[in-house]
Image 1 (spheres, helix red, strand yellow):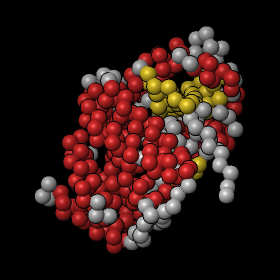
Image 2: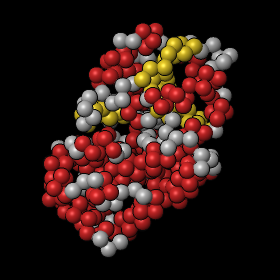
Image 3: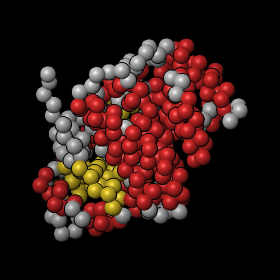
Image 4: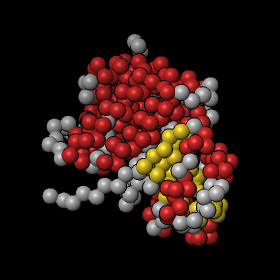
Length: 361
C-alpha cells in the first residue's frame, strides 16, 4: 500500500473584480513579488484587472512576460533566464492551456509557487497538475506531472465571456473526452478510493455540458455571464481538472486524445484547429469503436448543435492524410490502458465508420 499525497488547487469563480477579493490574502503568504506569464492576448486582457486587484495588498507585479507561443521546454528555459522570473517569489500563469502548462514547467524548475488565471475556458490546465509539452514546431512531445497543481485558481467569468467563443467551444470538446475516456479506460478495474472517486466525478464533466453547453455558448456570443456559462466553465476548467489530477495518469486519457496527438503531424491541425476541437472528434471515434451507440448518438447530436467537428472534412483532413496520423496515434501512451487492446485496424475502422455515419445524419 502506497502513501498518497494529494494537494488540491483552491478556486474562486466570479465576474469582474469580485473574483480577486481574496487575492492578497491568498497570495501574500507566499511572497510579495509576482511575475505574470501568459499569452499576448491573455496578458492584455488580465492586466487592467490585476493592476486594480493588487492595490493595497502589498504585492508587486515585476512584469508581464509572453510565454513564447508554444508550451515547450525551450520556452520554459528561456523564461527562467529572465530577471523578472528570477526575482519573483511566485508565478501568476494567465491564459489558456499552453501558456499555463509552460508556466507549470517554469514553476517546477524554479521551485516557485504558482497561481492560475484562466482567460479562456478551453482546457482544464488551470486546475490540474498535468502539463502537455510540445516541440518548438508545435508537434506534441510528452506529458509531465508537476509536484502539485496551482495554489489557487482565479476564474473570472467576465474575462472568459469576452474572449472569442471558439475557446469555450473547444473547451467543451476537450471536456467531452474526460466524460468518455476516463470511464472507458477504467472499465473492469478494481480501483481504490483515489481512482474510483474521479471516475464517478467524470460524469460531472459531461452532464452539465449536455444540459448547459448550448446556453453557455449563447452567453459567450453575447458577452454575458449567466448560470449556464458558470456551470459550463466549472465543468471545463475545474471538474475536468480535478478528475485529471486525481486519477492515475494512465487512466486519464484514451483514444480521443491519441487521435488528436497523432493528428498534430498534420500542419493544418496545428495552424488552424484547436486541441479540444480535434479531441471532440476523437470522442466520436472512441464511442463508435466501443459500440456505445446511445451515448454516441447523444454526443453526436450535441456536437452538431454547437458546430463541433463530426467528420474529417470539418478539420480539412482527408482519409489519406489520416494514415500517418493513425500511425502516430498508435505510439501514444493514451491507448496503453483500456478494457481491450486498441489496434490500428480498430482505430482506422472507427474513423471510417464515423465518416459513414455522417453521410446519413
